[in-house]
Image (cartoon, rainbow, N blue to C red; front, side, top):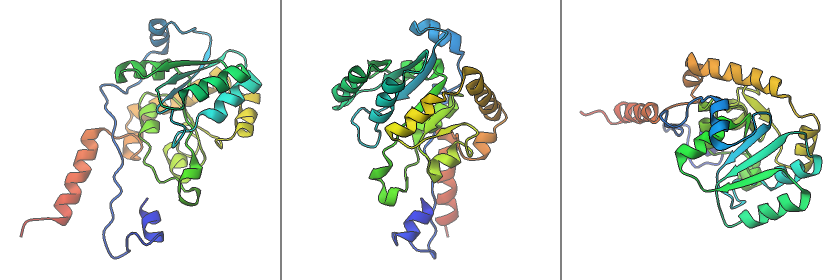
Length: 239
């Protein structure tokens, strides 16, 4: 973000710029027992579960391509749970119906319940519409991905500098262009549950030993408050 602002002359090198991300609520977003989450939600223990949580307006988030690809390829035992609502929900339901995609739309849910679906997942989705960002450069902090990671779940999202950083160069998930053909190739060689569990194991280990916090990938709102306080102290000290 800082380099983007300077490049576009929204800010200058000789003035301080602080990029402060969003934080997560650790009382809601934390690693949960997948078996227990699925049992509570009535989800098959044998499925490879994909979970998307967010807007269905098909704007910043564009789940249409992955739904179509899922329907075209029909990978065995893979099911996608869509948590959220928006004015394009019907269009997305029609795409799922047209291509016979294994997609279950749950609508808008309380945050605590949405977190259960993240806990039930093997892989969580953040299908950003990169075309909306200047020159295709993703400039959002992306709270969604941080919340998924805080739950100890690997992420499937778009390849860009910010997502590459959050996923630690692919250590915590997969980077795939948000296009039907790219997702079809992904589903043609869908990672096994065992492979995804290995990624998850590394992710949870690095959550527990505070590596993700030290990297600035998963921060709580308390951490964010401290960052704001430091900026204020450093720049507006009393004379």
